[in-house]
Image (cartoon, rainbow, N blue to C red; front, side):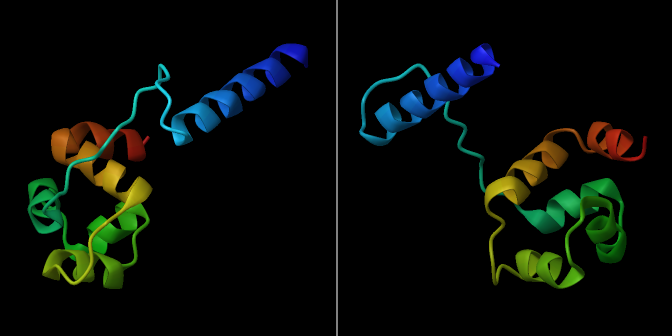
Length: 95
């Protein structure tokens, strides 16, 4: 249990340092904006199929495709993965 505590403690200390603007050795990932409709079309899935495959509501998917809203956070990361390697991601999800 001691090593778990030390790991959590170190992570929290690094997070505090980073939030204060101090230089820490962490990698910050900034996902690129995506064109959701292009990504979906590359998968050859309908809106209903795409939404079901990735756990997204069809309404949300339609808002993204129209540009009314933009995916953020984990959804944006997932869509970047699908954009880069749709067959691999779909294969993993279908296991």
